[in-house]
Image (cartoon, rainbow over all chains, first blue to last red; front, side, top):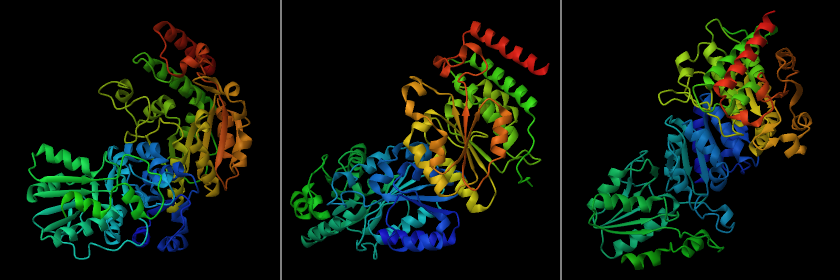
Length: 305
Length: 281
């Protein structure tokens, strides 16, 4: 997904001389090196100085440019938080804050490099838009959106590397602010976003093996959330399952519960999130997710898949 | 068309007269509100006046290719009264300062006429100025970014991040000022943080062309900035007096924020008018 982002941004920057990328000492993987070499005046490396990364993006945007701030998610959102809030959100500037490797992807790097609360934190900010693509193909669409939109700031939550595509045969096209059905069924609906889509697809396969008709939905735009789309999913399925790589507070799962309560939904609703805990565990991304309870077999056992 | 050359003349007598008028206007507005950071505005009156009336270039239509960003947002009263004088803000805007139906508050808000960035939280302005200077350079507009920082802001780590970047990028179209009144909420900086000084050498070590002048000497401020060598960002450390212009406010921390009582107002008004009479004679 990282390389896909770089390629999409490079393409956008080729077409639009106002696109800048301001990075905080992150290695220029994939097409990022091409961006740096071809547009050196628009590739700004601030070094390990994330507050200035956001402030410089704000200054560029105040002069009409379309900047991207890019580094590992904890350092693009948490470290310079007041700059994100005041410089970007308060002034409502079209700056994209790219959070690379969000969630617990950096599984061996420990809690300092995990982003378990970013949707809650970014989502609390007025004017902030949040997009979390589920695969490289969605990342391309989301990056193209970020490169042309003038609504205000975006937090673009990305995975890291090597994710497969799930949306090649998606029922719906990618559209900002809309739920996207990857597959459409009638019994069970799995709502998710980001790279944990892989587990949602495995869960869907288990349901299908038991004869259930399953919808899988990429809720790629977390803010503004497609509330009508969530209502529709809750109305049309008798079993809804939310799976997210995020703390139990402030993410997708509690929003779905809130919407379900408000509309007096009749379906069964199960939600699976990261724990409200720093788990001192090392291993693969899957190992970390399993330690948080996000393991397909465990989820399947709880939901009857 | 803008004249892209540097301005080489600054009428110091007119500046002195303007600054007294600006201080008077701020003092008048102080009587409508409980608080307005009067000492902070008086501290940088000459610096901001010199930027607007001496340094920023202006076309016949009044527009400028240059930008002023008030990094020390709490000093914005001087910005407001200058923008009023220039006709960018209306008299009613200032009369409604901090009132429910007004649009001007204790810190500048982006979106209001003449306000180039929302500031107030300290340590944000210099990074935004770096971004603005980059954009102007990228578009080859020739636009120069002027920004005024408080000395308190120089304690923010983010300010040092921006200092490092501005010089590393060789931003010759960035001109910053530190309003060095040596006062902050808990006292004199030279007493609470002795190693805050020397300042000039610190900025020079970070690659900035730097000079120190009396920040209330408009001629010196103008001469220092217009005589800069260029090729890299420029920093002027202005030695200033918090509350400059009214005797009982000078170097007294409470005037960071407080509004004068009617009696104090009268004394202040008399002092400013006496200074204006001296200036004319």
